[in-house]
Length: 72
Image: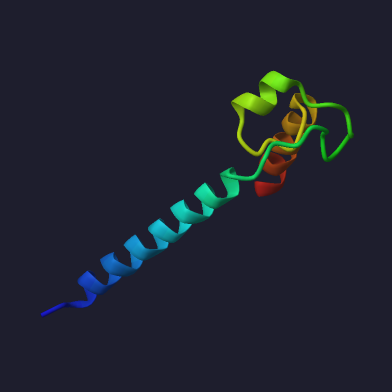
């Protein structure tokens, strides 16, 4: 007979699998040729190396710095 811990573990596993599926779906999108922020070309090597890249290195660094700052 299943108890509350079994239900919790099952729910956790379902959520984990859903998150993995979402990431895998997102990664299938092609990389952009131009940065979404500054519209400068994204180098070919960066586009081939990082799946679904949307920003140039400079804009990505700014975005990451801002997200760290606003997270607290």
